[in-house]
Length: 287
Image (cartoon, rainbow, N blue to C red; front, side, top):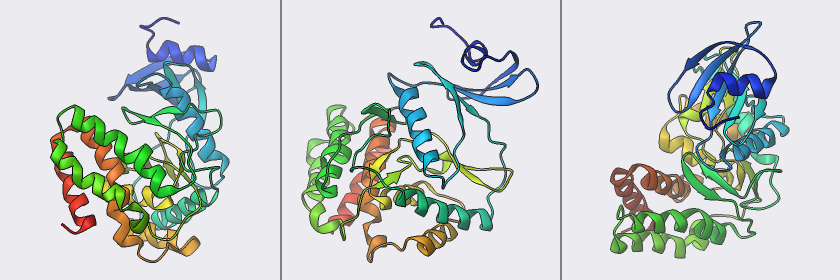
């Protein structure tokens, strides 16, 4: 293997199958057709340990036997090869089924808040941002220390958020014990559940890709779906509630759980998300 190895050569090496065609896509992705006609997806890792973390996350989600995920066909430190999911269109029946399956995935549980998938590194990634999986037992403290504050500090260090502005986010963290709602056991989270990571398959099944999987609060996955949009979200939530009703007041806590992805996007994409982070934080604490 060399540093310039392309997706075709990587797939041939990792699967042991000859390659007949390669079609490059954006974001370090490529559709690679194997001899015999099967097409797979090759993804170039975005940082140290990224492919290891993603492969471990996919396997951990698959082990729950609930939400479908693409099968991992091979990986090394640079490339991840998975099955290709033929795309379909969102529909109401699939959305309700997805909500039920997501509830069952969360119920499969995790050893602790912040627990990494078995075999996965603690130094993982959420998109192109580093994410440390450090276990904890108390969700409000863990969420502040390992999800909100690290990205807040980075945003301030880069000048995307001003120190004075950061105070309102810190105030939310101080009040998390009273804002968090009833205690929850650690859930098995996808961890980066934005719309682009929800694939509506041609077979009618919904599959999840690109996880930042870890043990967390189940409302965080649902808050991400609401933040970034999801077709038929009302039906997804209805299906979820059929299987695992959410604790009273969950709708008022959505902003609390959106702080993590908003700050990640602030670090990655700049001031527009910083403004949204501040607006959300002010709404949470009523200022």
